[in-house]
Length: 461
Image (cartoon, rainbow, N blue to C red; front, side):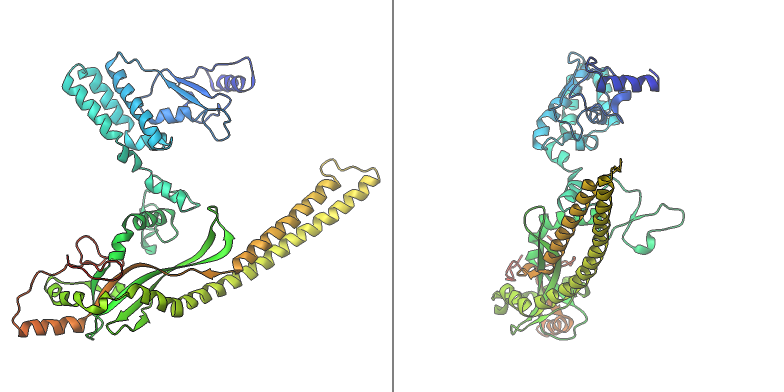
């Protein structure tokens, strides 16, 4: 069929009640709306599994009111049919585990070239038991449950954290340095910074999976401090919420900030500022045994977490709240003034327009496009909108801080302490003993590092 004939056939199928069945080639696999139907039969199965999704998407669309059913006809007495049948049965099993989103990841799990290779091998060598076993194992590996969950996990997390921008399946070029966005001879890069949906979703996933490692803490050295006093650094996460309710039914968090409290050996706490650990470094091999005795000190056995939280509530939280409140008040005042100015003008216009139309209607001059009732309704709708927006903005003024939560911690050794410990060890001619390794990442240790567990109570590894 030509394009015009195909268009007429599609229109007849969607509009003419006597046309009950449409028979189509793969040309109907994408780009057209066949939502009038809810039953589909795939007679000729594509070697590209993504085409199954595209075909089914013609009827299984947003707004479909019927339950859609799809039948895939397989010649199961053939070698290639047996492979495809195993593929479809595996998909049917995984569909429940993936909450019906199996087609979202099918193209990542097994591509057209891979499936084509499996089918050709089945045709050529499918009578050999070893080949049949290998093909079945290949299919199982491709559609293994955990593997199916991996391709879309970051994109799905983007929807959970509420990013408005979509996370793409691939990016031609990305960068973390603003100066590298535009480079001669290369495509413009996507700048991965805070607020970018890909970075936000990735950070959220990492925190969910490895937050316990962050709380275990690490041992770091401050080369810029010539003193000899060891300190504990506690990382606190502090949120502030307003009175508006989010989609989950909870009060909306409008600011979330990491705060750092440092506690010395005498129990005195102070504000450590913004991310002080960035100036610290992990211990060298010969330094590990020197600092190990510090991990056994009694002051580290105290409830340092509670002490850090109390200090933050008294000294750091009020500052955070005041900064957010000041910025919010200025923004709300500007927004409220702009909203009132714009909507009040529109309300006044439609009030005046409704009065004019009413007078014209009384004089027998009816406006074909709009009548006085509709004009009055628009004015009322705008008035309701103004009241709603004003109430929302007033809710944003009501800020309340939540209690800080411990996110992680570390023990900071000043450079002077390490040098003094080295001199002492040298004077006693003590050989280095196995110590506790440490590794610095952004605020936490890893599996290769010594850590201070929750409560900043050190333990040997």
